[in-house]
Amino acid sequence: MTAASSPLAVSFASLEFQNPLLLASGTAAFGREIAGVIDLDSLGGIVTKAVSPSPRRGAPAPRVADFDGGMINAVGLANPGVETVRDEELPWLAAKLHHARVIVNVVGDAVEDFAKVVAELSDVDGVSAFELNVSCPNVKAGGMEFGADNETLARLVKLARAETRRPITVKLSPTLRDIAESARIAVGAGADALTLVNTLPGLVIDVEAKRPALGFGSGGVSGVGLLPVGVLAVWKVKRAVQVPLIGVGGVSRGTDVVQYMLAGATLVGMGTAAMKDPRAPQRVLRELSSWCQSHHVGSLQEIVGGLEWPA
Image (cartoon, rainbow, N blue to C red):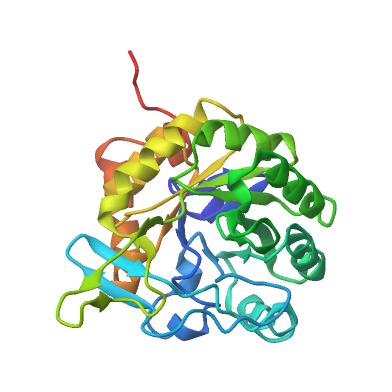
């Protein structure tokens, strides 16, 4: 059976994926670090860690902390910069992957930075699409998220759109006042798809030290508790726009993928669970395949947006 005829194969923004499971941005770096423990080429794809025009040192250590409900992190978008990613990281991924696709996550301190990164990487072999992380702070706007202002969001997407013919997905925050309206703005400006959602802001305190558990202080909350938040966001946005969606947040089981797809997602990102257990992605794919067999689903594409609610 070829990938295209597999029950797990899906079509997304003119691209074919052998299955819907992605490793979410920030959880797999650029692939090298986890290639020895996760079979990257068996996945639908990998979303790289953030790429900015210039290298970023990121937040002070410690950057990650566990708590009973999941994980909190403040990495600070650390990355080697677009030139190193172009010359070293992406060629390695292109040589390593033959079936899984690569989506490059893009960040910046100003609107123009996103277009710069996209332009630099648009023609690089092995890059299938770009994910614009508009949840990061806009330095010129005093730290406001790019996605929190409709005019800024529209301009950012338009500038990036002008630099590539490859698909662009925009990653939105669950804290937006009206995520469906933000989705419409992004799509109207040229986005081919949307990623829902980013982490939730939170604070974990080390009660013995009486200090935050993270060096930066606050951070982004991820893990199983984020699943209902992400599924609801996907459902809301699916009713507002007619573009494919990537659901992200809290995925640890095959049925979590099914939830996201029923709500309207075509691809589903997995992060925290894979960081805690590198065997988790393969287990999730097995569970997803078993679910398809037991529910007589010939193609996962059939269930996208199949949630029967409201009646």
